[in-house]
Length: 266
Ligand SMILES: Nc1ncnc2c1ncn2[C@@H]1O[C@H](COP(=O)(O)OP(=O)(O)O)[C@@H](O)[C@H]1O
Ligand SMILES: Cc1ncc(COP(=O)(O)OP(=O)(O)O)c(N)n1
Image (cartoon, rainbow, N blue to C red; front, side, top):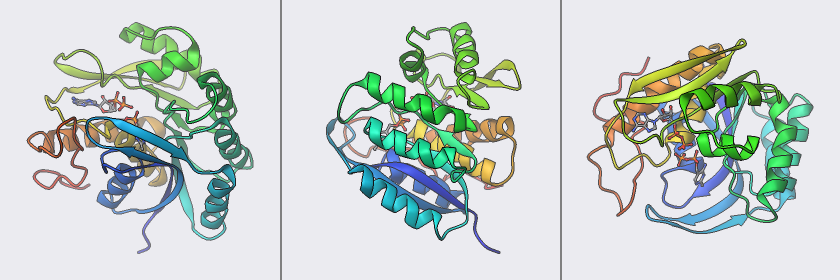
């Protein structure tokens, strides 16, 4: 049997916790082949980000052309798109139908120019997204108002879906500790609040990247969007729980996509 191919477009994280490294670990754990287009190189550890070096846009598009000319890509996930030019170039490929089952994780870290320019460029990408996965801060930036409560998240998801993505899930990993980890899903014209047990851990680096990549993987496996989101939420919760005792570095460390202690792959 051939492995399913999923393409991740994003930045290298030198600490290995998030970005392309988390995406590729997630795909490997799900027994899929990960192709990767490097948009930027981030110098960081578990404590802080030192620098972000964007790849020139022509280097990003050259990687994209090489992958898409040859490999049977079944789904695509985007992470850091460091400049408006890069985001516009990715949007052009999406508009041409070259990026199937596109999951957009709008990490709004701009390397050059204004954040406003990056947000404007994202507007071109959103109509082509199958699933958009902002956290509350990213949703606030995209919309221009503060998304705080679960009610806000539902309204925000509805407003973002009007910009084109078929499904929007606003993640709430940064809610003050409570019993549940709450995300809000907008699909088929209605909002649903998704609950899962909140895991107590200092190690949550890469949760957003892992979640979005797992959604892309499940879309590649022909799940519909809400099933993919529900599955990914379970997956990331297990990955956080399995790494809760890890002490890799002095800040929030990576999560355990492989579930070395408890994951049963389905
Ligand atoms: N402590 C936690 N326990 C369980 N699930 C969590 C926890 N933190 C985040 N998640 C889940 O991880 C996914 C990514 O969410 P989030 O952390 O908000 O993304 P980001 O890293 O982009 O801010 C969501 O499904 C969220 O509910
Ligand atoms: C290289 C790199 N660094 C950080 C991120 C941030 O991703 P985000 O989804 O905001 O949060 P986590 O994945 O770290 O929970 C990234 N995508 N790439």
